[in-house]
Length: 258
Image (tube, rainbow, N blue to C red; front, side, top):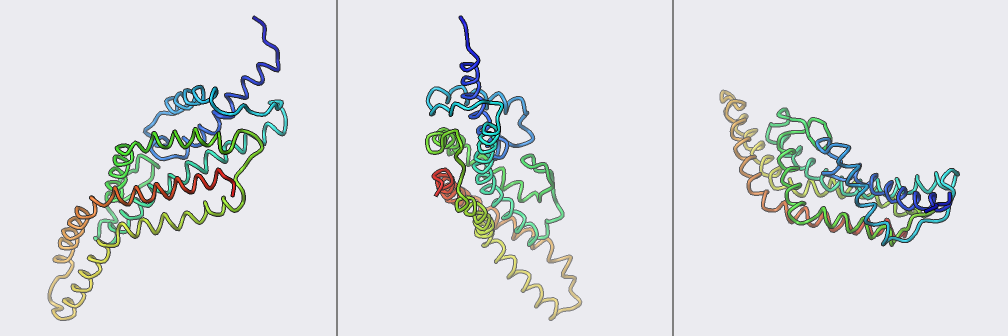
């Protein structure tokens, strides 16, 4: 059995470029990009998915792998994968923002722990919201939908000199406002209640200066904050679903190049 150099180059290209797009998305997407996921596992999963998709995706262009055009195609695949993963990453960042807003309002902003997703210090309330959002995402088979969207991306934007348009990339930048709006909308009931409690304690402090507001107010703020967190938890599924629908719609717009 003999193989020519052109055949080997075409076989390598058919695996290498999908591997780059899939690997770039896994490096930026939530859950899979967490530091708790070993890099070897991530690479192995990327290779398996690439092998599965190779027979069903359009063949890559016949380009010399050692050329400027091949380097440009590789850059495009990385950009597409990172953009797709970054959109979903901002969905989960909305829950971190919501937790930080509630934690600062109830006086728990100093109580922080390491976020296993990003490896940074976040308030414990943000960590609780992020864990809940992750569990809901997995329960809704969001990881399977993510792989399906990834597979369809090779049909909508095949491997080649195709890249998202400037308008679609600008929509990706604007998507950051949706992240902040989603976080504030989720935390708004608790923030509004805690604001009213702060106003009540402010009036009390003016009416009775001898009362130690710090000794009385801090436990009350934590109690009310925890109560509203419990009331907010059932709405996490609704907020996550809404953000995911918008995120996948933005991915479709990104891949369509409009």
